[in-house]
Length: 89
Image 1 (tube, rainbow, N blue to C red):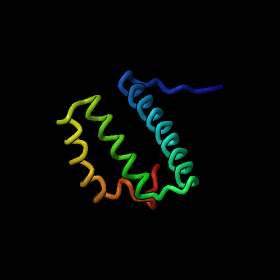
Image 2: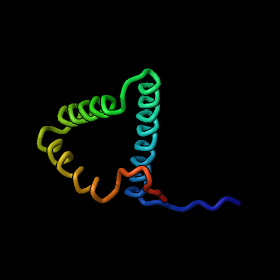
Image 3: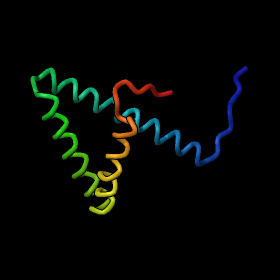
């Protein structure tokens, strides 16, 4: 017998966002791997990815929210959020 856990609408929304994020990260990983296989240096790929991300954030949310996102990156980097050694549970 399968036991299902009831989720609130907010929890379901959060799960959907997390699933979309995971898929987007997988697409990004694939693009990164393909680019490095084509001989593009990681620094160039990173620069292009950040330019695209910031440009699309400005387009979607405006300059103020893009600036807030960029400003939040410093504390997230210092907290180790992007470290390859970080273990997610």
